[in-house]
Length: 190
Image (tube, rainbow, N blue to C red; front, side, top):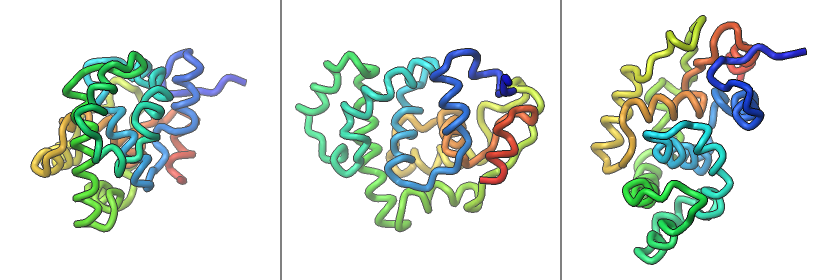
């Protein structure tokens, strides 16, 4: 039997698997949160499916998204990344991953974890929306604007309000599955 999904994931099996298994599921692990931060920043100006197809290459290129290692990348490491055809070879995006890793370490020292900090913008609990159609879902919210502003103030890059709302959706800080999607109630329970 065919499952009713959010229309944005279309017919692509990779997109559907991501939608069915990850999108909207609350994430509290700092390394996984950092992974989504890097990937959402890399996606700016591109389609999410492009980034999903490059995800394994990103994991390999960025040491499994080990932000402690990435924070110490040298200029030589950065140059090597820019030669890697498996990732988006944009100097600003590559540099932002390194800067953001350094900033995550600072956040951890201040808040105990990156997760504590990120989740504080939604009161520690996923926000539940009730969108009937994808076209009703906003591209940013007051929460994503506050998060973006605070991250920028702390030195993070590629963290605009739209990017941060996509991040919030991906890591389950907000449940934006449409109400007719089979994942809506499943993510509501998570």
